[in-house]
Amino acid sequence: MTQTVELPLWAFVLILLFAAVTFASHFLFPSVRWFFRRRLERAVARLNQRLERPIEPFKLARRYDMIQRLIYDPQVAQAVSDHARERGIPENVAFEEARRYAREIVPSFSAFTYFAFAIRAARLLSNTIYRVHLGSYDETLLKAIDKDATVVFVMNHRSNMDYVLVTYLVARRSALSYAVGEWARVWPLSLLIRGMGAYFIRRKSQNELYRKVLAAYVRLATRAGVTQAMFPEGGLSLTGAMAPPKHGLLKYIIDGSEGAGKEVVFVPVALNYDRVLEDKILTDAARTGARKFRARIGLVLIRMLRQLWLRVTGRYQRAGQAAVSFGRPLALSEVPPEEGRDRSRVLSAELMRRIGEVVPVLPVPMVSYLLLQRGALSEGALVHALAEVVGRMPQAEIHMPPHSYEFAVQSALMQMRRRGLIRVSGGLIHPERSQLDLLRFYANSIAHLVPVALSAPPDVDYSASAKGNSASAGS
Image 1 (cartoon, rainbow, N blue to C red):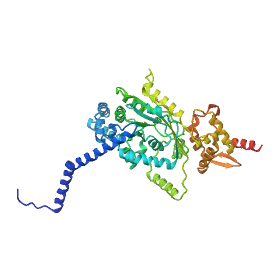
Image 2 (image 1 turned 90 degrees about the horizontal axis):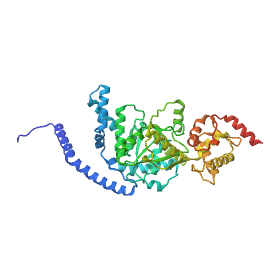
Image 3 (image 1 turned 90 degrees about the vertical axis):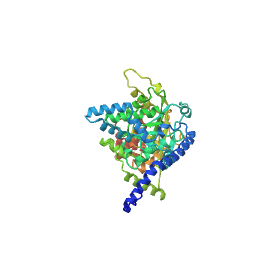
Image 4 (image 1 turned 60 degrees about the horizontal axis):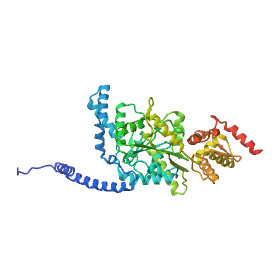
């Protein structure tokens, strides 16, 4: 035992390295984790005092623990057994598949990432790109929601900026847990989104085991009172109009509320933009029917650097207005089950109706609508037509100065001329024929709010309309 043992230097260094790692993992790391965990808990406790809806312990649970809880859920366990039997594979193989789905779905929420970085980045980005307006916002109704209720913000989906805008505008209320699609599963964006508490979903997956794991996560989050945000349309609108709702997530939320003794309150949120950053991609997808968008980080970085250069050189211009309005909250208990009707379908139809009621009316969508309906107009005629239409929409969320429609029209025309959506000829403003898809895209966002008597015919002969306006102007 006292004899000297000779070792090569590399073996001695390797032994020391293994010893250091073992000591750190058994003694040092747990203490360090405990120290930072205590500091984090105190910081979250102070943060919860400022938030209207405190961060639930469910969101703060360790990701590993949440994955374990999910894969050992009784319904998931039964789904694993059924999946193994149907596919003719061992149960341990099906179990590992369920574990992979759980890792894909479960977020890794970080209060520091969300409140110290994401909120500030969302505020900076929103106000850099747009002039942000907050529309209908009944503080009394929102504050009257039971503190123990699970709140779900339900939104129309116009742009990927929707996430950024709503995160920024509800920052003082709570931390939102988003359901995000495959577009966000690209590194390093995925790390940031997970840290913000979002969970990834495969919108078109027909795999029953995957659906059971996702349903179990949504059910647990709903019962834990996690404040959520979702898009019933299931994806970005390709036409600009609100798309028919999907019912999957709503059904999971309804199922999660049953037997939990906790009310679920849905808050409708409507968004609209003078410019949707992805508008050309979306209209191209609508034309080709290929609804598959690739997240090209290189292209995004190039565009960001270009915008930064424009700011440095003093040539940067904002993309017009972006507006968010909140509708009337709807408690799940107000939508009782109806015999012969799927409750999720009844709920989604009512939520989409309430969202549609408060869609913000902005200058570019309104001018696009008027030009598509009436053809070429002079600037004065556009102002008159705008005032006429707005006057017949007393309940709509109008985001234009009531006594300065001239300014609204001028700002819209400046944006549209810069993008080549219109052309000016003989004192008249014409819709650019090569850009009709984009004009319809913006007009469709508010078309459902315009009185029926003013609705445009299905197909408009723009050249004939332009000639008619020229003749009337000449006479």
